[in-house]
Every structure is written in C-alpha cells, then in structure tokens.
Length: 339
Image (cartoon, rainbow, N blue to C red; front, side, top):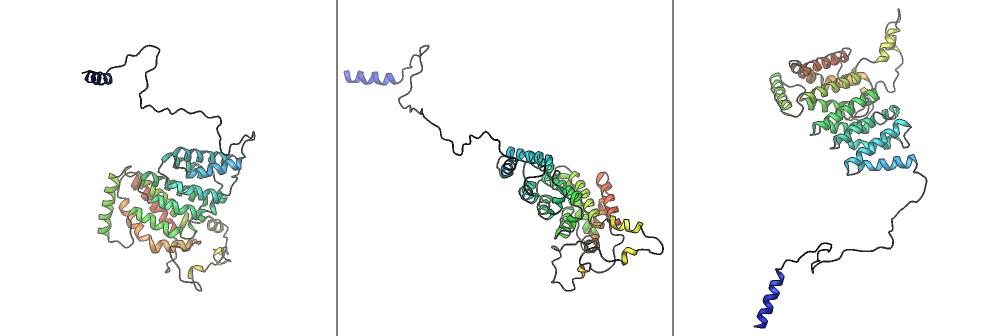
C-alpha cells in the first residue's frame, strides 16, 4: 500500500506546476547544459598595430581583389572606390590588369554593379583603352546576346563608350569587324540572301517577340542606335580624306590617291603571299577592306531588314531611317570589286 502511494506521489510531482516568486530566476531543467566559458586572452592572426595608414597602391590592389567577391555590395563598393581613385590620380596599376579584372562584371547579375562598372569604364585613360579593345569586345558581345535584357542594355552602353573612345582601333582589331557584324545581324534576325516573303514572316515573328518581351521596342531601338554608330565608325567617311580633298587645287586633283600609302601593307587584302585566311578572325585596318566585307556579308541583309523596319511607326522607324542613311553614306564610294 505504501509503495503504491509513493508511486502516485512521484507521478503527481511530474505534473505539478512550479510556483514562481518575484526576484527569483526560473529553475533550470535537469537536462540543461551550461555553454558559458571564460577566456584569458584572444589571439587575432595577422593583427597590425601600426599607426601608419596603408598606401594607395595597397588599397587599390585590395579593392581590385574584391571584384570577385560573392557579395553584391562588396563588388559595388570596390568599383566605386576604383572609380574615385582613377578619376583623381593616374591608376597605380596598369590598365590591362584593371581591364582583365573588371570585364567579367559586364555579365554581372546585379544592376547596381553594372551601373557602377559603366562609371568606372568612363574614367579609364583613353590612350590605354585603345590598346586593350580586343579583351573588352569579347565580353561585350557575350553581353549583347545575354538572356537578360538589362545585361544587354549594359553591353550596348559599353560598346558605345568603346566606339566613342577608341573609334578606329575597335573596328580594325582582329576579329572585331566580322564577328560584331554577325552578332548584330543575329540580334535583328536579318540574314543574307533571304527571300522577301520569308523575311517578312520572320520580321513579324520577331516583332511579336519584342512586344511580348520586357521593355518592348526600347531594347531594339537601342540596338539600332548602337549599330548605326558601329557602321559609322567602321565605314563612315574618313576625316583624313576629307581634309586632303579640301587641299586639292587645280591641276592637282585627287593627288592623295596617287601619293604613297600612309599605312603598312596597303595591298594586304589581296593576300598574295600569305596563308589562307580565316575571314572572321582577320584584322581589317583599312576602310576599303571593311566596306568590301560589309558588302559581302551584310549589305543585302541590312537593306532588306531596314525596308521592313522603316514601315513601323514611332521610334523604330525613325532610327531605322538614320541607320539607312549611315549605310548609304558609308557605301557610296565602295569599289565594285570582288572580295
């Protein structure tokens, strides 16, 4: 009897609610484990107690390494520091090293990072940029064909900046003229030697895709504007020839056409003694070479595409008309010889 009463009291004790008193802490459960610890000293690896601030070069290198950080804010802040550092004084590191670090950010998924990158590109020394166009154009073309419309807009901004800064050095670099032409034609859906009815159906399909896509025709208009600048830089009337023509007086008409060439290997386009060429990877330094390649690969496709684009109302039709005038002006003096 006593044993059963004892068991009842023990079971009842488990379900009794403890009375709490003011000023006293709650009793800790039996399964409580203390996690308190006491430390006599804390050791920090690579702790610097120097009163001297780090040099500008070391800070620049540190922020340059942060461009590969996984944190969006760190990448943006690093670009902001580099922008302010380069705008106030010459860069402490060579521009090719800086370009090598920043060019992958053209495809960054964060819009604030890409916006800050465009600010950094515009403070780089123009003389140094002209000699590093080939490394930038690769990522720019990758951005132009990106799935995200925001990334494509950033790539177009970068291409416009590069064309305005480097100009002839961009279109005369190896592989730039042909590959960029094909990239634009692929974006527009313009193909060489396409039948008219097939081209019209293709254009209507692309127009429906543009309407359904984010931004509507805004991106397409920007692509046409950038392509117009690209064509104008590549095959537009050269300033040197205009200045030489203005100096022509009787009886020395067109004397510049009979003078010594101003560039090396003026007949290189004939490829008389060279190895077979890769048309896409070739460097077309002369305007006449670029005209011949444009006529062979893109002229018919651009003319057919512009005829359809001009039929649209609004900004698309106006920008297409500007592009048509640029193409007509650039190809006006093209020689009718086989490429």
